[in-house]
Amino acid sequence: MVRRDVIHGSRALAEAVKLCDVNVIAAYPITPQTHIVEDIARFIANGELNAEYIRVESEHSAMSACIGASAAGARTFTATSSQGLALMYEMLFVASGLRLPIVMANANRAMSSPINIWNDQQDSISIRDCGWLQFYCETNQEVLDLTIQAYKISESEGVHLPSIVCLDGYVLTHTIEPVEIPEKEDVRSFLPPYSPPFILDPATPMTLGPLGDPSVYMEFRIAQQKAMEKAYETIRKVNREFEKKFGRKYGLIEKYNMEDAEIAIVTLGSVAGTIKEFIDSTNEKIGLVKIWCYRPFPREELIQTLRDVNTVAVVEKDVSIGLGEGAVFSELKGIFYSEDVRPKIIGAIVGLGGRDVANQHISRIIEECKNPKHEVIWVG
Amino acid sequence: MITIGGHIREIGSTEKYKTGGWRTFYPEIDHKKCIMCGTCWIFCPDASIYREKGKMKVDLDFCKGCGICANECPTGAIKMVLEEK
Image (tube, rainbow over all chains, first blue to last red; front, top):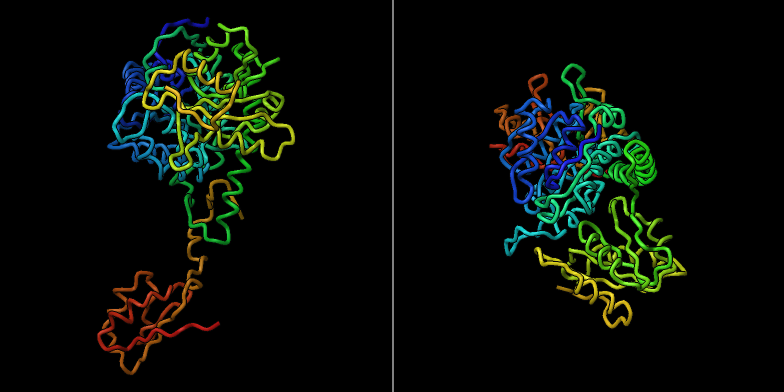
């Protein structure tokens, strides 16, 4: 029987970790992530999850412990946010370079300074080049579903790359929504035990993390890029299997009201819910493309879906200071550069540091799309 | 060979990686000045100095040519010489 519960996004994530039979969790508390790892600690204390819980002294150590555990063949998890993710930065490249399928949750939160505990997506967008797959959630159900799928994708043959599941701080982590929690047996049949390509074990000594001098280093980076390219097909396959098993449809992107859309909004995360509300309240031909998977970047899907639209507005909660635009906006323009047919694309920076994004702000962005005067607008 | 994550199943493979190729200058020991004090052996960060048949010698397969031995030698017996290949 599928259990229906009304829970926080953080709890949905902890439930997913429990369902996935994770072996090792290493984490350090940070707002607004803390109750994810608190819930997991409670599951272990209650005997609901048989896992090793390592209380470390920093996020750098949390990621280091996950790397060690994953290399030893364990299914591992950690969760962090903002400054904590930044402190892990060095080890994020090690995890992906060693090709360890660690899954991490990131409660999206603004970066200091000034210190701010509220939501935007600067933290995870800023680690886009670390070689991790990145998934963004709109709802608490997606938090649970994408975490389960992230393990399967990361551990798949030919991928072997870590994943970060992003859920907007407070908007999802601390907001209660109904969530369907599948049976453990069903998740077990969907997600088989982790079968690592190598295991760091004193009984069979081996070297992990050797020097890669200029004669081989580039080949290792190419191998990582190839694994990301392989991940496109793996993600589509896992999405199909997930839909068959649990009845909920996923993809690299979600299309909403795009059939005859003249204006399209591209976004990631929970703000998609507000935009869907806005679209439902008008008769205008406005559609939404929600990026579920930001890395690998859904190049083909975005080109196919957006090429015949008049104007696209990329609504995002991050900005590249010094370029003056959001990362997704820059990348979307980039993939369309070599296309003969392309829409007009504008960038809208919203919701930084937890600034509310409401209907009136979406309305302002749509007005700009109808009569574009600026390439980038800051709305809020 | 590019293995996944760069793992190497063969143990002790570091010995096969001759880092001596990184060198620009190599140490040349003047055995007339050398007093066999072993200071160079103590300071060498690559453990590339060894004693053989009563003489201090340099393992050029692994010496990176840092020159610490020449700097520390109390009698000035070690000279760093430009390596021309």
